[in-house]
Amino acid sequence: MIRYAIDPSTGAQGNEWAVILAGGDGIRLRSLTRHIAGDERPKQFCPVLGRGSLLEETRRRAALALAPERTLYVVNRAHEFYYAPLLAGIAPDNIVVQPRNCGTAPAILYSLLRIAARDSKALVVFLPSDHFVSDNQKFMAQVRAAFDSARACPDLVVLLGLEPENPEVEYGWIEPGLPIHGQQNVFAVRRFWEKPSAMLAQALQRRGCLWNSFVMVAAVQALIEIIESAIPEISQFFMRVAPHIGGNRESAAIADLYARLSEANFSHQVLAHQPERLAVFKVTGVRWNDLGEPKRVLASLAMAGVKPRWAEAAVPQFA
Image (cartoon, rainbow, N blue to C red; front, side, top):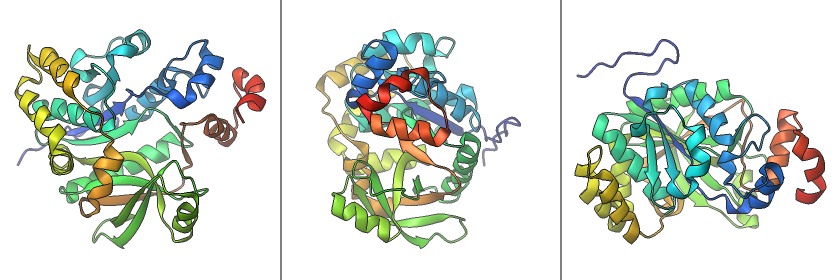
């Protein structure tokens, strides 16, 4: 049995990794990022919350529980002008550069193969870089607990779910099932709902369903397995280039792969079809928002009790 050292500063074991997803184009927020930064940069590279870019904020959040040397960043080549200065000093092996944006499923699978090439027994948390979290310490403490659950249930993907504050139709929803034996605040997943109608979202909220934060913790091999099962037509392409990951041929092999790759959404095409492989960790004591629309950005600023200078002129325009 492999024993991993525990990092005294974070409590993380040596096989625990983080992946920060920062490859989206942020199209719906472009008018706001133009107002804030003067150009239509993707939101993760913009100081939307007034305290550095969202990518930097996510990086600080991750560092509360995971070692920086085991934190990867998924980006797209087209955004290099924006991400290069923010990731200066990060080891090249920890920057996963996609030739183009093909959706969340390829981004996740590529980063999983990067980690697997370095540690086949790894566990990983995926952290989108466009979230507001009201209390980073409390949130990451629960991510740490989710790692414990993923270690105890290595075949499951542990999603972090939050109690909904409204019947949001743009989020994924999780319908919890029975509690998982021996795990606190962790439940089986009865069903996964991706972007429900307004009427259905109201019903889901009434019956105790949770927002899916898209933060998830699992063994790397478990995630690879569910992707292979759900979208074999995409995973088989990645498996062909897997032997080149970490070698001199990786860049060329990935470029060739992405030139032929179709888009794939991880929530819709992977999670929604395999509830039996999912568990949900119910997050408590934290407010959360996906910063996908201007109105959610303004709501998050109100939650945090802050008002950056840009927001003073933006409220009438973006409310």
